[in-house]
Every structure is written in structure tokens, then in C-alpha cells.
Length: 250
Image 1 (cartoon, rainbow, N blue to C red):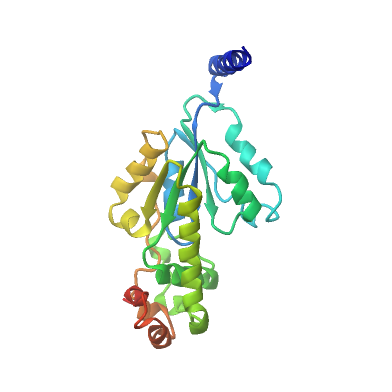
Image 2: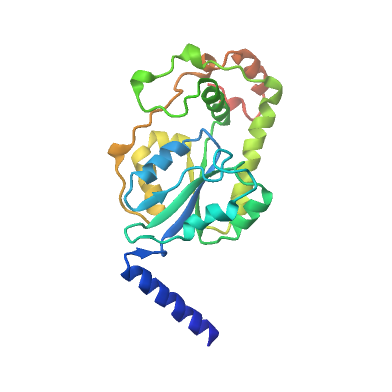
């Protein structure tokens, strides 16, 4: 009897919200990954859809004190939205949540997960270093492209393998955390090479149907060869040669 009452109450609330022009029966999802793996491009895809409410980095240090306010951020995914909204999502980088917050998030089984990765993890590190150096995080206007000589960065050889392994560990942790979940893995390289197909696949995955490719303005920021982007390329090569990661060298 109690279960029946709860079910009837939930149905009644849903009917009331539907009648008022809003609802809570939408897909909840998170785009999980590392910085510089194409997340801004994918966020832009979701924001081009009139059927998706897409938040940015609501759990980052720019928007809160790390370790505080997790429940407040999550509450956005249980608000009422217009009936045209089929999905509500946000972007979460591996380091945005601390351990106990990841554990709490794991319990929210209704969330779908899009796991965004980059096969060339060295490119991830180079792109991140360039973004910090130039303070240019998005490339939308080809006329304002940063010259390669201004982008060249120095990588610390002694830290390089540890940084690559950290990314690998985060990727494995994410797979383990959401092994029982409806998960879509997307690689940056596939997103760039087969943009329309991958973007449509992501839109469909969250239960939406429409998106507008004409609103996507991002361009690949660092297409140059790594030996042009890394000032100490020879040192980096020596560290990675004869390792499982030498394939990252162009």
C-alpha cells in the first residue's frame, strides 16, 4: 500500500508539472574527462540544441571552493524545466570533485555518463600548457590564431611520464566508477575527424534529437607538429622513446 501511494503521488506530481508547462522527467548526464580533450566543443554541441540545458564547469575551483557546495550544484539536475527540455547536463573534470564527492555522485544512478578522452595524452598536456601560457582557451576566429612562436612551451621531462600515467589512472577510475552505468566513450580524435557523426551520437545518447551545426564555431587550436610546439622536443623524445608512450611523438 505504501509503495502504491508513493507511485500515485509521483504520478500526480508529474501530471501537475506537465500541465503547468514544466517537468522533471528529463535525462540527467555528465560529460566527464580531462581538460583539453575537446570538452568545450562538445559543450557547444549540446548548447546548440533547444532540447538540452547544458551547464559548464559548475564544480570547478572557479565556481566554488573545492569540496564545498556539491549538493547545491547537483540540485540543478532536479529542478523543473520547460517541457521542450529532454536532457540536463554539465561538464566535470577528473579533478573537480574530491573523493567523497565522487562517491556521492556514483550513487546517482540516473545520470548518464559521457566519458571524453584523448588518445594522444602528450597532446593533452601540450595543449593545456599552451592554454595557460597564452590564456587562450577557445579558438573561434581563424584570423586571431596565435602564432606558433608564441605557443611554444617547455615541458619538464622528469614529470612527463608521471603526468601521462595520472591521466591514464583517472581514465581507468572513471571506467570503474561507472561500469554499471549507461556510458558513452568519445575520443577527441574521433570528434574532430568525424564531427557531425560523433556530435549526433552524443545528442541521441542523452535523449535529444536536434542540434545546430551552424552554431559551432570552434577550431582546432594547435594543429602544428609537436616539434614546433615543444621547445625542448629533443628532451621529451628521449624520455618517451622506447616506452609505451613513444607513439605520442609525431
